[in-house]
Image 1: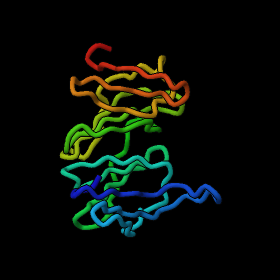
Image 2: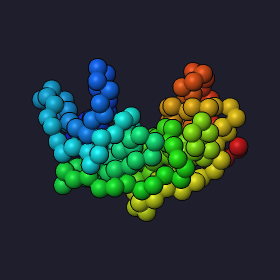
Image 3: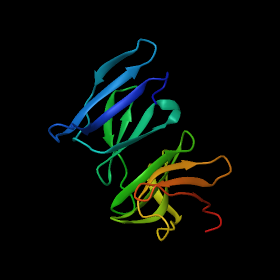
Length: 165
């Protein structure tokens, strides 16, 4: 989500050809219209995006660990920080400065990681229980500090409390 309720769509893969895209579009619900914006620096697929700093910056993850930050006011892209590990499984925003992700290696989601925009870096918060979930696809932080996790391979869900694990 971009400031003013607009939505950024970035990258992706064409179903018919399999081509990975670098194109980006912004949807404005007030006009019910899409408009092209500056393309990604490289084609990315799949992409996950999280809004930061009141929608003025968008962290985009694509492929396994590529990250870029879209600065909405200037309409420019900049490289994002590297993740701890080789693969990012799922990301969720918590507030205007903090994003959580499950990071690890292929088929081993090893760590719950935290990104802070003010520090522009990722850090490992704690080990993730990869023995229970092999491909966490959706991650949402709950108001009480726990995380709701959906596993893509088994469609299993779990509430993960990093304070108790």
